[in-house]
Image (cartoon, rainbow, N blue to C red; front, side, top):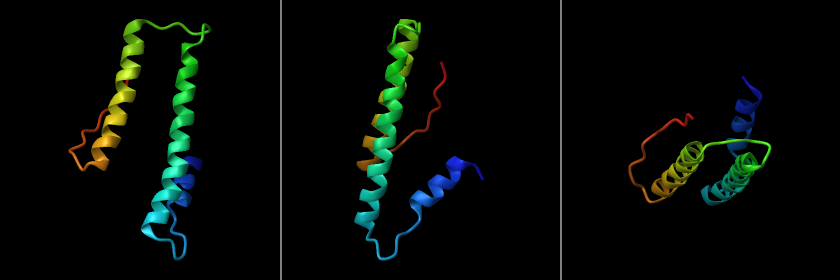
Length: 87
């Protein structure tokens, strides 16, 4: 098992006596912080030390917005389609 896989397993492990609401809050807090950190890394790609085309930027922003839309849909119980990002 990879290090990432074991972290995910540990993250989801039940805490004795933890309510569903508390588990949601615990996991959501960690996952949202991690997602924001990853998005901030993508923001670094806008630095002058990198070069991109407007089309590549549009692809990145479209993929990110699509993921946010999927999260919104999941919380509103709408149909979710899976996609894979590729430049």
